[in-house]
Length: 300
Ligand code: ATP
Image 1 (cartoon, helix red, strand yellow):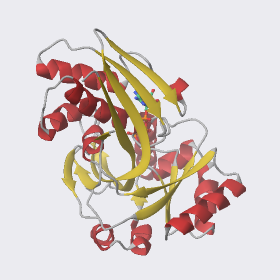
Image 2 (tube, protein in one colour):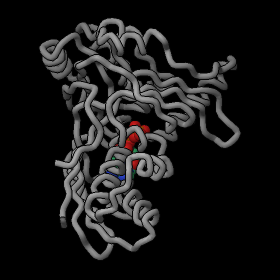
Image 3 (cartoon, protein in one colour):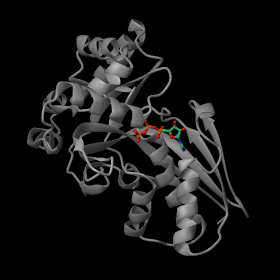
C-alpha cells in the first residue's frame, strides 16, 4: 500500500468545565466532547522524508512544517515504532482553523491512523491513544469519536452513550482565537471576580439528555466556562449567539475556545432554517450544518 486517506470529524464541547489553575499551568477539566459531521481529510503517501501540504478552508493559516500537528503525529508514531519511516501528508481542511473545533487535533489523529496503516504497523487503538495524549489534550478524543467525557487535562476519556442524532448549526467567524489566550483571559476574569473556583464535575442532567436523545433538555444544559473569556476577546460573538437564540435554537454556546458558535436545532429541517436565518442576519463569515455523534477517523 503506498497511499492511505483518512476522514476525521471536528468536535464541539457540550460541557467545558474549567477548574482552578494548577501549579503546572494547566487546569483540571471536565470536557464533554461530541464528534460532528464536519470532516478534514488526510492522505498519507509513502516517501523518504516527512512533508505536509494543506489546502481548503483557511489553509494559509496552517503551518506546512514541523509545527503542523499531523507531522508531529507522524514523527511521534515513527519514533514509537523505532524506525525512520517517511511520509508525505496532504491535508484537505473543512474544519475551521483555530475555531475551537479541534481541527489540528483531528488532523493529528488522522495522521496516526493513516501512517499506522501505510507503514503496516498494526498498532492497536490503545497504543495510538498513548501517543495521541503526548501530542495534545484533544488528540485522544479525535481518535475515539462519538461522545465522551474527558477529565484531567481532557485526555482521560470515557465514552458516553448518546442516542442522537443531534442536529447542529455552526457559525464560523473571521479569524481564529488562540486557545492559550482564551484560558489566560478566563484566569484574569476569575482573578478580578475573586470568587472560589469549583472543582469541575460532569452535569448529570446533560449526560441523561444525551442518553435519552432529548435535544430540548440537552440544549438547556450546554455550558462552556471559557465562553465569557471568548466573548471578552471577541465581543461580536454576543450578537451571533443572540441571533441563534432569537431564531429558536434549543441551545447556543461558543465551541471550546471559540470563536465558532454552536447552535442545537430540534431537527435537520430546523437546522436548515436556523442556518438560513443566521446567514440572513449577517452575524457570521459562514454558516454550516452538521449532525452528531459521528464515529472517529475512518480510512476511505
Ligand atoms: P482546540 O479546539 O483544540 O482548542 P482549535 O480548533 O481552536 O483547537 P486548531 O484549528 O486545532 O484550533 O488550530 C490551532 C493552531 O494550531 C492554528 O492556529 C495552527 O497554527 C496550528 N496548527 C498546527 N497544525 C494544524 C493543523 N493540521 N490544522 C490546523 N491548525 C494547525
